[in-house]
Amino acid sequence: MSTPPAGRARPRLFCPLPGAIHPDHRQVDAGIRQWARGTGLAALPGHEALLSHRMGELAARVLPQADREAVQLLADLVLWLFHVDDDCEDGPLSARPAGMAERLSRLLYAAEHPAAPLLPRDPVFAAVRDLRRRTDALFGPVGGAGLVHSLRVYFLSLLWETGQRTAPECPGMEQYALMRLHSGAVDTFLPFLEHAHGIALAPAERHDPRLEALTEMAAFLIGWANDLLSYRKESTRRGRRLDVVTLLRRNGADLGEAVETAVGQYDRVMCRFLELGERAAAAAPGPGRYVAALYRFVRGAAEWELTSPRYGHRLGPRQLAGAFRDRPGPGAVRPLGIPALEWWWDTF
Image 1: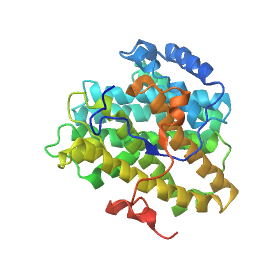
Image 2: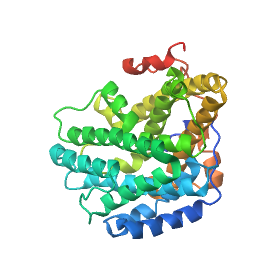
Image 3: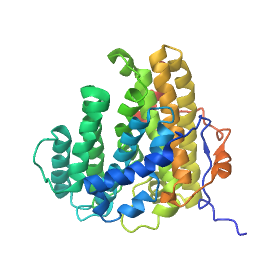
Image 4: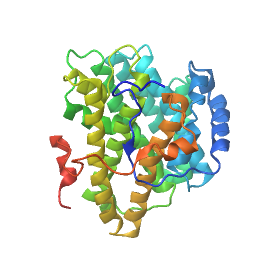
């Protein structure tokens, strides 16, 4: 068997975090189908392909110990997010920032005010209304408000990506890294990490610099892992690519060098994530449970990308066990080298 060219082989990431999956993940996937039919999402182009990617398994890996109802709600949200994301990338507004802004602002308003009569026949709007109502019912108004805030942040990143598709120049590494913290829709999962586990962080705990840094690092790790694990498939798409490997290649690196650099960046953040997470978890029970939820999120997202057909890997359980490295690469204890994110290495 021939060896893949440098950079084309699947990168093995350093991710010594616990992985698990909810025992009802197959039933959750079946529940997604039923919900999609009820909201009308099942009639949208590309829907069957999305269902084949096993979105319920992603939710089940992120919330392996939560109640089934919370896992189902997150799984339905994930399906909806992928419909929105794919439409923003490939739909008629993908390179029209003004049109994209108008649609996303109306979509956000529908999430804020589900009773508002905005585009009542659009299944994407019908679905977000249902998601907001169910989030309120399951997690209370604080959980619903958290969902709306997360969508606001996510939509901002989608607008940034839309503008980048027609921008005369590519973003710099710092600019890209800052927006990548949000463009993976990580913010939309965060209310679930708290409410689905019954974690009631006090405001002082939620905004503790250590937990804020850990939350951002989790978003970075999930985004960088996605860029690396999806590159082989996504690099065949037409149009401007927005991922760290492509960005490094545009700055002069060949494919092997770009992958090596991105993996090294991942390792540096993972090492700091583990170090700071251990200290934050020891501070109090609430933060400790939240850190454990972040750990499951980072590992679960990577495992799903390696097992789902979406990015072409489709690893089985035995292959998955060996898909991660036990040790980081050399130099992983150093800060990242992106000025805006250097505060993650501050002494808290």
